[in-house]
Length: 171
Image (spheres, rainbow, N blue to C red):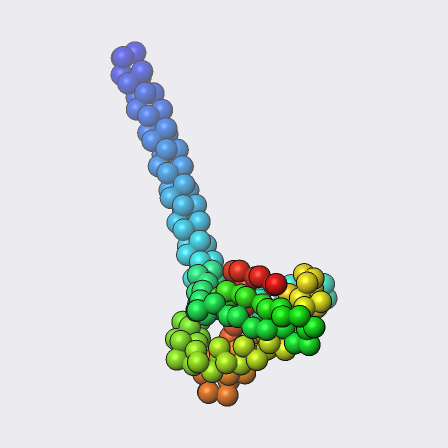
């Protein structure tokens, strides 16, 4: 009879342990599912919400990671400086950076007009102004405006992110 009581106690203990293990596994499964759903929603949500200092909910755009497209403007540009007492010239290699494939294609289509207008821009520069970093940055900004204008006038997309000098020689 003592043996039967020990067997009954062991059966109750193993049944209780089994219930605890099953409950723990169910809770763990629910946590994993919850984390999975949260990650899925966050990854697929293009807009997220942000609460500002006044407690108002404001939509914030989540920037997509895009690969930049670099469009080289070849061949090398060569222009004389304006108003020099002696012969001086500017020789530059440049690339346009954009994230829009349509801009890349449009630059290729309108390359002769873009090169013409950039040559006029480069030829109108003064040696003293381009001899500084500030002058080179200003030239880059003006070049973006020139290229954007050509594209815009042609009815093409004109979103240019940067105008990059890959070689810059003044003599």
